[in-house]
Image (cartoon, rainbow, N blue to C red; front, side):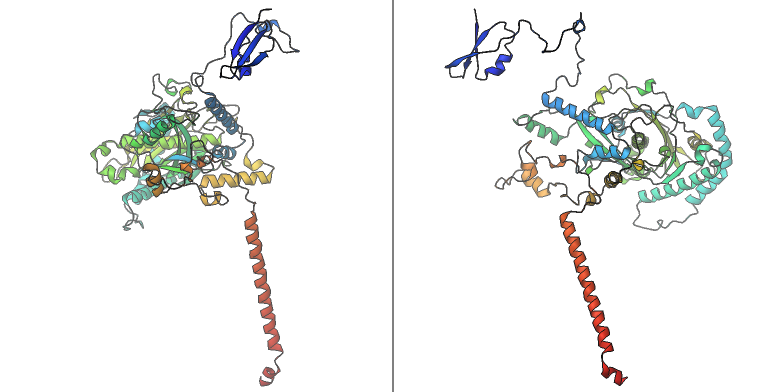
Length: 623
């Protein structure tokens, strides 16, 4: 019998598995690399066919097709390495774990689980909006801006007629409230030299908005159904967290990537200019917010062309975010709060009044470009505040940032200082903005914004502008509508208050409260504080490397992928509020023993003094 001789390396077993295309018997000559023959090895005989069913399985006609069917190829993942595919699959399983959590509190805990010290977030607030920052906020929220226009619902004849009717009735009370708050009311902060112009404007805006809301609700509260049952919040806490991809890496990150490309130990090597994903945390507090049980009716249909991203839209922002003043980085736990807790039935934002005190910043006032760019800054504020409020509201309906919305959410925003009013409406169509879903997501959000309008027609503040007043009343009279879906909360199973396990309920509530309130001293009382790179280390060890004679023991001096190299990636551990450690138990027992000892000594002293007074006969004779 003719046999084929194949010369294989020392690890001939691996090579033999690749030689199964040869049929019949063949011999393998094992070679150890030195040219010498170590012996003959007879490899197992292969079957005559290229495929054979395992024992116990029989071929069926359905196993063969006329045309080959191949699995779909994902353009994003088909070029991934095995390490990247495993990481991708781990990320998808984590998203599914968040989706399976039964309530918003548990979802927030699961989002924070991979980061024991919190995410390294870029903090966004309303204190300042940089020049020409509209484009960056539109990108970070995937929003399309329609300027100097409101949705068609505000042009309906019924709403216009109703607004004009109530405007005539409320003209004099609102004019009186505005004059009282603007001219005839003395404030404690008027003569305070420590108060800045921004803080004074913020407090004055709070007073005017509160009085106008009181006057409107006193009339409309008894005649309009959704206003008679609404909730009013003064300066509520609104926070939102999301991951956004498609951003330019910083200069320091590019330098680190260049070093990683030369490393032999790094598993996944990225290009120098590959886009990055950044976590963002919005922290805001409106002057006043009205909440209802049902959300505002959607302004456009979810399948409208406005809700679809135009073709050839760039998915990577061309500039670094630091150019727009978005550079404040802080370790922060992911927090999503729309001004109320998840157990409240009034969880839908109807109207939110925000201040415009950021326009009084000294840098804004001293630049002619800033004065002409005010409407741009107000548009940025309207987009950011509306998106953050609705993103947190979507979580209370069970939709986290990795689960796409089944239906849109809408809200109304008013930016005012009491005299100038800017009206905007926002519809949230998508929240999947992470790098994993950014390229596959064709949806976009929509924001309508009007230019600023004065509430007075004259400079003497005696005649009220009816157009502005009617627009305010239209926002109040816009009726919320119940969600036209059979199950509006498909990813919520059981509220936290309905859990039977009291221990589990207390653990979830305790950790959720500490995360949302950012209580570092409570969260880290059983573990060390988060690792910190001191300034002298940054200068002499990282930038200039002048301490080469010292042993490398700090976490940033360890080799790449070495255990302890990335301490910030330490997962979060749930804290039992009833847990008491050994050291704490010892201190508590010692404290109780000292208290008991002091009590016994005090009792002995009291008893001995009583005996001395009673058993002294000389004192009795003297008396």
